[in-house]
Length: 423
Image (cartoon, rainbow, N blue to C red):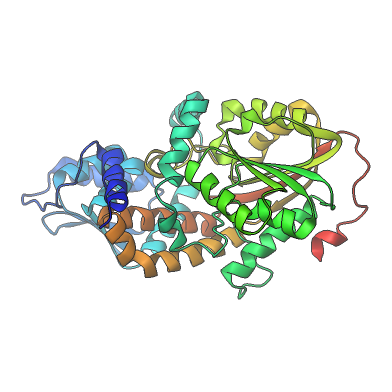
């Protein structure tokens, strides 16, 4: 194993637990207390009473009489973590091998999501959750740290399961049988058509990933692009691509935060970046857009979202995407309404993201042995849970994917019909 791979593995273990390595899963003997049986019933009720059974460390099964899924809990300590903080503890225990899901992981997760979605989202706990979510502020320093946590763990890892363009956002499938590569190209073309890009125009992109969209816009639509991103590894990759393709004179990749955007542009685009901005910075993002768009300018925000305001899954927010938030449409409007932007089009690509994640999960599973060599088995389990959980969330409607097209108030230089969007 190379030094760089070893350092990534150590970095993963350290950021999960503060330790260099995890103890091997331990199995415990001993009977189940009466209070623990009651806690199982309370836990299942809090989850919406899914058809689920917990198999405890002594082999005793508790829960639904005719379960659709079974979870093995290997020790008492893990059990108590699960009943006191299930959202965070399940992900950690699954990653460490202290909890096992019998059968199909995706089917189990969809069962949980559908049960939870049937529960009312009101009351004191929801209010506390929303308060804490709003209180987390993505400062410049914290934003950089959050992005490093997820994106700068090695391009070689992402290259194993993303498409050849390294697009880590929802694809657009003209037909269900479309390949992932073609669907990602179709997504970029859809964005360009929605923005009505014309040769000679200028575009600013906030959060450009590995640079595929910026290069696509310059190469196929004749525009000049400035693309901002705080991920050092992604910017390095994007610059190398631009130079290799002879597009470095028309695409400038800038290693900086969206708050550093300056200048005037015909179009603004952000794909998969709003999730990292933080609710308290939405007004700031709106001011950045207002300051950089020309009088006839238009823009698009492409973001994971929700049907109603709520917090992201605690484990994903802490272990995978620190500082992330999936906004509702009314929350996205907090970016646009204070600056009097006019919303021109809203499209929900939820099922397209579910299919994108299906491709990613299949490719990740095929590459799992290599991922285990690069990191460790806890990393493999964690990312499989993250990808399968995301797929379950989009399949069940717990998460949405919004594309919001907007322009300045009163702008009339827009197409008369939606014909071009449907080409």
